[in-house]
Length: 82
Image: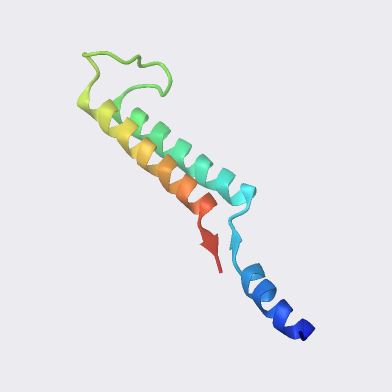
């Protein structure tokens, strides 16, 4: 068997890499900035609102957007990038 035949699959796989932990951290920081701005816009401070039946709808929307952003960061970290 020729060595070049064995190297072809390895070089093909090495072209696909996942996002770096630094990119994931940047994404997480962006999500945090988003949720802090959202809470501030609603007149609250992030981290001070406890869960319960009396949560304003704006805070529920902020939390939902934060969760969606966090999920997107996780997908970016896992997905291969060419």
